[in-house]
Image (cartoon, rainbow, N blue to C red; front, top):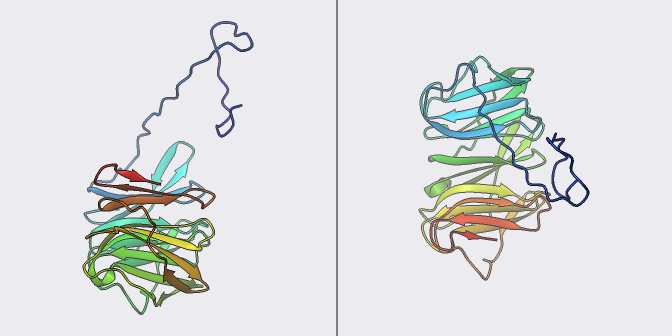
Length: 251
């Protein structure tokens, strides 16, 4: 056992004595998928239990969902109400019950509820994004949904109550014309980080108190270019960003 690593059973062709140096490698093998997607891929998400896999794509039906059975991925029937435009991103709630899609045309966000293997479209939120959605991210408790995109829809936040998603007012917005490409919640959902293009600081961090998200002052050291990816560490203490200019990453 090595701290921080998985336990692996291996068979060696000769006797190994205590303290002998051992070098191992692991190969990843591609698994064929029956009824594979035929359009350009835009985003992908697993349910937290690894049973369901959703692909966002740029051509009809715009969303393809698989169920994993052993090593096989079985394509599920398309939802009765499918998106009508390019789907750019997908996100499951941690319990795998809700699936959100961000896409390029009205209504810009679509939310499905899963019952067994059936995904049923929920009514649209009353206040929808007003422009192209580039990303969707559920909070770790499944109660909040961040929908990020461009211009006036750079950030839309929704709170779920049952099957109803209600948009939350944001106290401090983003610069006009910002294009947000990524969002991530901290482990306890207190913090929400965004990465965007347009100009410095290229990032924003919000702190949640109840249902109020307030933007925090910028960190003293900022990214040097547009941030296209970010994520919190599992303990929520660290935030890693990747951006387009040297040094290309920041923690």
